[in-house]
Image (cartoon, rainbow, N blue to C red; front, side, top):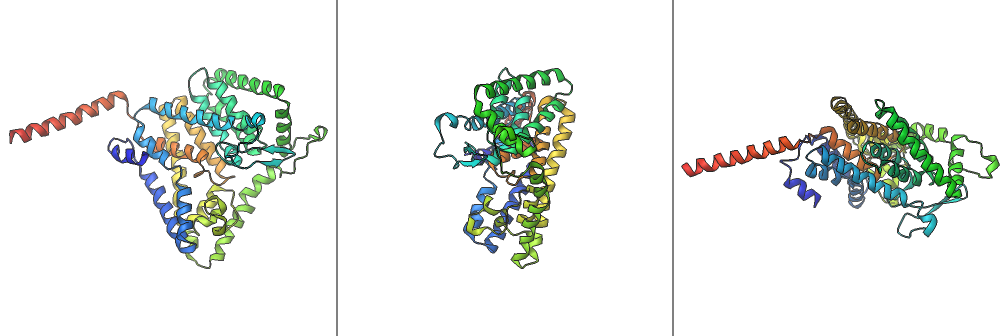
Length: 392
């Protein structure tokens, strides 16, 4: 339905959509390569996974006409992620939800699944939604920020803790001209988190278990976390893991794989079934794009990603409002996260932000005045054409 509406509204969808078309075209190239290297079924599966969130861009193009529409879209994004976050702690009360991702264990605590699936995906997305939430007006901003933060924090996910810390820094930057407002909002949110920890003792234990990964000495708490240290994990995602993923290209015994990539199987089980996997997971979105689509296709996609940042920053400086500075800050964190996680451009919680930013980077939302002017102009042309036809 979204695609049909987009086609119907294509003439009135404001902006240039070349970046989206290029993104989709490279994805089709990946489909062709995967069909040749693996099997058409795996290729179709990978294409569907890679473009799963693409209709979000089409929805923006079809249904966005002005700044008010943008604010409403952002509110929808933020409220949905708040529901995603809330789906984690609510399982402390009702137990695991059967149709969520299966629960696991870390540091002696059960890790529940969520409404958005992978806990890793939530961990690398929570900071993005916190920044967006901070830019929206209304008395519910701080409570929503607390809800967004609490779920990932108690999920025993060190990426979530790091992302929340980064988000706090970016929120302060976004509100650098009104630091009092930022300080009040962040302080209120922090007090709310402390209150939750006091009310629910298990929250404190889970937070301690996560902070061990950041070097906190919790020997007196009796908690043992066998997860790798945060600094070791970050370094491996920049070096060892991407290199292991890239070296798997040589197993395909064709020089063309370096140009065109090895297909969706290079993303491990993130994009294809296990039987079609060709390489270990890169845990780095930029490295993964290169091995999946080659230096040609992957290079083009990386250029698209960087161009979005450039255009958002330019728009933020020209617009000067918290809204666009917030979106630019959100995308900057998205790019940073992509250095340490794969799936950011196709896993729904992160890809939704990506396609939002792609649209806003290239779109030209019109004011109500310009919309009315354009409609009047179109009707005038229709009237003139009808008058000429009648005169003939």
